[in-house]
Length: 201
Image (cartoon, rainbow, N blue to C red):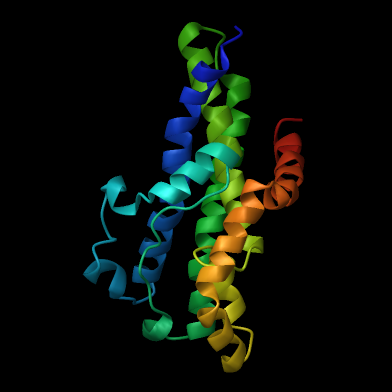
C-alpha cells in the first residue's frame, strides 16, 4: 500500500513523541534507583509523558529523527560512586532506546499483512528509526541535553567542565544548526542503517 507523504508523516508523530520521552523517563528512574532524590522532588518520577515533553526537541525529532525530551533533573551528588552512577544513568537510557528500536524493527517481520498490521508496521518502522537515532546521538554528541555531555564531564578537568558550562548555549545553537544542515544526521543515519540492517537480515 502506497501512502501519500502526509499520511506517512502521521506515523512519525507518536514515534517522535515517545522515543525521547522514554529516554528521559528511564534516566529519571535509574538515577532515583541509585539514590538520587532530585527526580522525585522535581516531579520526574511520573507516568505522565507530558512532564517530559519539550517542543523544540520534538520538532527536531519530527524533522530529522534527532531531538530530545525535557531533560529529567538529576544529581550525581547522591550516588555512592559518582563516576559509576553517572555512567549508568547516562548509558541505561541509551541501551533501552537501542533495544526498543531493535525489537520494533524485528517485530515488523512477524506482523500479519492486514490493514491493521500495515498501520502497526508503519508505526514500528518510524519508532525503530527514531529510537535508535536517539540512542546513538546521546552516546556520541557531547552537548547538553544529550547524555554524552554528562559522561564527558566525568573524564575531563574541572577547568574544561567550567568552559563547557560557560559555552553551553552557543554549543546548543551550533548543534541545532548542525542537525538542520544534516551534519549530525549524516553521522547518525549510517550507524542507524547498519544496526537496522543487522536486525532485519
